[in-house]
Image (tube, rainbow, N blue to C red; front, side):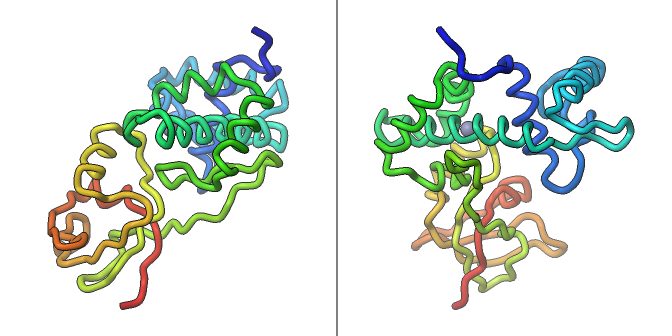
Amino acid sequence: MARESRYSESVGDYLKTIFEASRHGPARSGDIAERMGLTRASVSGMLSRLAELGLIEHRPYKGATLTEAGTREALKLVRRHRVVETFMIRHLGYAWDEVHGEAEAIEHAIGERFTERLSAFLGHPEHDPHGDPIPTAAGVLPETPDELLTDVPPGGRFAVARLRSQDPSVLGYLASKGVEPGVTLEVVATEPGGGAMEVQLDNRRFALSERLAAVIRGRATPG
Ligand SMILES: [Zn+2]
């Protein structure tokens, strides 16, 4: 099958990882290695290659940032991934905590034409079911509220927009409690020092560990 990308699957996976890891400054090779489950040695070899291809800027001891060409390529793959996940959930009966692995494989097998037809079929969604923004075909990332639930004091309300985790056990647990993009949580109590908290959703109260609470992003709401 003809690939629409000039780059290998592995190059694409690095670019997406660097895209995620360089939100708050250059991505360090140790962080990239950890996210990809690779050794630092193999990561630094690939970073040199990506720099030669003009896809990243890489300064030893500082970290890697995507160039304009690298960003464009990363956003293209992120778009494919999130459009595919949205389709799997809305139309194929997958739960939203089950789609990530297969979408990782599919995004490399489909081209621009298929992606754009699929996006049109879905009505050009701006967010995927995790609440993650779907870059437009032109490579623009829609705005998404990204405040932390853990910053909300007891009595405060919080509109969930996004769950920042790809871990099926985390997503599955939150789904079982009804915590998903679009719902509003009320914070009942927090542990001193922050971290773990008790929340209410509709008429149910439950506890969230620090790790679970940290993935819930959105916007604090009045009232
Ligand atoms: Zn995913």
